[in-house]
Image (cartoon, rainbow, N blue to C red; front, top):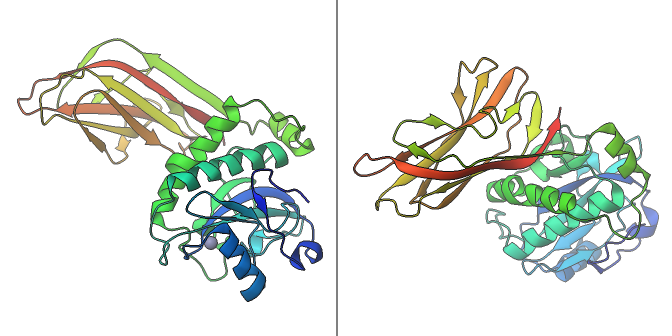
Length: 320
Ligand SMILES: [Zn+2]
């Protein structure tokens, strides 16, 4: 039985004593399709359902824990407890009735804190689950084995937040924080030795370059950001001169090439108005035999180029 120190304990009986033990290897995030506090969610599980999640999270960041994380809870179908005794820890989060809206800032903060705790306390590796039984972090609709009959939970807006804010936030905080006082259990050590801990990419280039309306590939240390096969969460930060003409639009996009730099296929571009700092994120796996690169262009009303002053690429990555 493990209880998260910053969650309010609201233990559900008889489930907490009667359900079998698990060795938690995953954290799966849900939307409740109800705008409830952690306390109201507890009352629902207690009074109106034989199902339950381990955690409930209200809009204000109120986090309740209903079942210890080493006991099975029943929110994730086939992932609740697998035949080998591993299982998923679940967190239900308050949402609108259609579970279409985004998480609040308070919810995102608590999901990151909970993810870091799951990593430190239970050795959940810092990666997005690659299959339904692969240790890591996920959201409910990611794999059909995690639901009965399919689900859209937690909704498109939150899936986007999971990929761009919550999971990168967990990685950033877990890799910049010292381990807690209580030593992590054995699985965390095994996982480090297995090489599941991410490496960190951090490359910069401060050579000024004029960017015009043609797509321009950028080199950091070199032009190849990642060589596949690789899983990563990569942020490009560009700093342009502040004083650009009104109406200037900066567009950036990641793209893949073969190992000779040929046969490009681009991800969708992202546009930002004006000068100054702009960020671009990519979390899609790089396949074997492909190179991930980044390119940028700047469209100004008079067609004149703008100055790129500094560029940084950073983020965690894993061999796959
Ligand atoms: Zn769900």
